[in-house]
Image 1: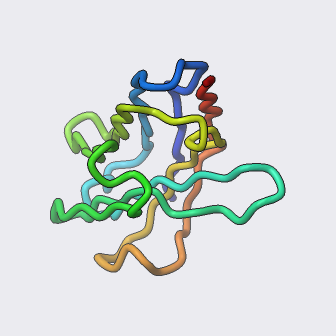
Image 2 (image 1 turned 180 degrees about the vertical axis):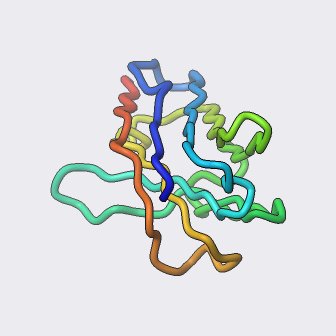
Length: 120
C-alpha cells in the first residue's frame, strides 16, 4: 500500500515557476513508476509526465521543454519542476504510482491533488 501526498501548488503569474512534490509512504517507493496528471473541471484527466523506477522520463508534448520530473528515492519523494508556466497549465495536479515499468498502464495509487493556477 502506498499513500501519496502532493504539495507545492499555488497561484503564479504566466512565465513563472512552481515545483510540485509528491511524498510517498512505504518502504518500496523506489519500485514504483511515478507520474503526474492534471485535470481541469469538465475535462478528462491528462498525462503530464512520468518517471520510471529505473529513471526513464516521459512528457506530454504540451509540457516538453518546460517541465522536469525527478525523484529522490532516499526521501520517498517525486517532483515536478514547472517553468515558463502558461494560463493553460491551470489545473489540479495529481501524482500517481504503479508498480510497473510501463508508465502508460493503469495506476493503483493516487494523491488528493494540488491546485495550480496561472494568471495571465
